[in-house]
Length: 108
Image (cartoon, rainbow, N blue to C red; front, top):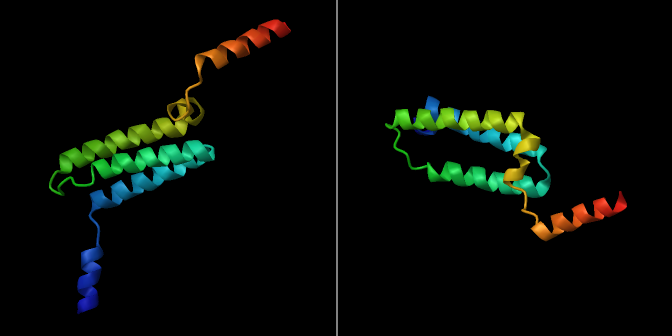
């Protein structure tokens, strides 16, 4: 009897399964980034999911909204991995960019 009760307690709702699936898909999508960017992206993803961790289970409309919003972001990430890399890239100092331009002009 005790094992049946434990199995029931571990069952997840459909929304919980969808949220976990979305989380895993995000982590898989970041595998295409180099290590430093992947670490930053994974940290951001974890932070976003933890921020909404305490939503009540009866707030299905809000949870569904966040799921739709998450799938939209995931789709953008999967489509534009190279274009979205700027989100986690370290900004370059303007003087280093300027000196690189001057070096390339001097070579011409």
